Amino acid sequence: MKIFLTGGSGYIGKATIGALVRHGHTVEALARNDRAAETVASLGAAPVRGGLRDLSVLNAAAARAEAVIHLAQAETGDEDLAAATAMQDGIGTGAYVHTGGTWVYGDTDGVVDETAPWNPPPVVAWRKPVEEAVLRRAQQGGRPVVVQPGLLYGGENRLIDIFYTGPGREAGAVPYIGDGDNRWALVHVDDIAELYAAAVKAKPGSVYVGVGGVNPTAKECALAIARSVGLDGKVASLTLEQAREQMGPIADAFALDQQLTPARAEAELGWVPAHTDPLAVLAGE
Image 1 (tube, one colour):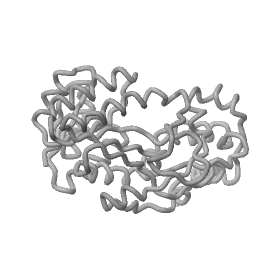
Image 2: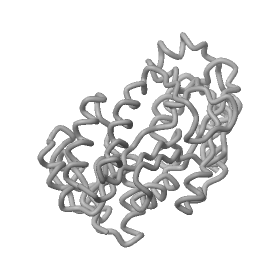
Image 3: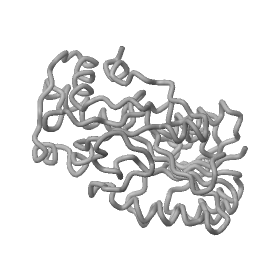
């Protein structure tokens, strides 16, 4: 299958290109500059020069493809929807896989799935109208699918590195919020890449949470991260207000208590997460 992908030079994108190429797909990837073009080319994808605001580029690239996977992070909901619309117009009846996130469900009060009500913190509240518009295309003959990754780990770790590993190394103790008993719905970057590869064959209108099914507490994660940087046992609690001052609005998302199941993706797509010990990976073991 010929697949066009945005965000290919990013954290999830690099892993996803690798998965798609391994599965025998031909990949074109959006590249906003020379460095991004070199990155996606080194992974086996043909670069398409442009950014998310280059709607004609997105439309034309989608029209050449049999499926689209949209991974790039937009700056606003309006920008994300405009890009999604351009690509859905271009792909027509081909598969369009859009990226959401599990934070939109808020505190889950136990283990939930994709049928749970939304209760997003402000940092991701913009996602709802975008995803609703994307999924409406199923009523018009389109093949929209939404993948909602959990908190990613493995490889570069991205958000975990930025807000926990780096600050912890500098301060001599890795932070966690409150009592740290809230649970994180984690997923390994290589597992989520495989879910994207599987999602191009999903039924129109499908929504899948991309989680590993193992939901350790935030304090357990902080302790594992501390171990990975030689600060064994050195963690420090922050109040939510302190976390907001240090992290910004994303603190409210890190403070969520979330447990989600990958059962739907397992049943419908045969996707089974291979990484089931996130604490060992976070600890560098």
